[in-house]
Every structure is written in structure tokens, then in C-alpha cells.
Length: 78
Ligand SMILES: [Zn+2]
Ligand SMILES: [Zn+2]
Image (cartoon, rainbow, N blue to C red; front, side, top):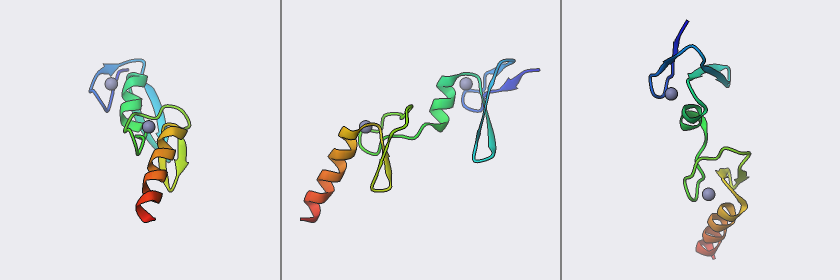
């Protein structure tokens, strides 16, 4: 039985099923799963495939990006 990737539309018998918040998603590859589900860094907009870093209610790819945004906003408030 084939199922269709919800990102690229490719039909495959070996799909990845990933449930997010109880809602199931179907992908044919990790690439498509990342495309659909991975959050973006609030500073450099790259895909976050690891744990990421949360700061000021947003998610960043690394401490460098988190520090850049927080420092910039602190400077703006001063
Ligand atoms: Zn796909
Ligand atoms: Zn970043």
C-alpha cells in the first residue's frame, strides 16, 4: 500500500509517519519531514534540526543567534 508524501506528493510504500500534537503527518523522506516540521531560527532563518535554543519566547539554532537578537533588542531599549 502506497501513501503520499504531504510535502512533495511522492507516493511510496515506505513512508515516515510523524505525529505532531496528535495530528499525523506522512512523508517519504526526512528531507520532506524537516521541510514541513522543523522550526526556523528567529535570527538566521535556517532549519533547526536539533534541540535549538529558546530565548525571549522564540527559537534559535544556536547560542550565537539567540545572543545576537537579544543583544540587539536590549540595545534598542536602552
Ligand atoms: Zn516528500
Ligand atoms: Zn540561527
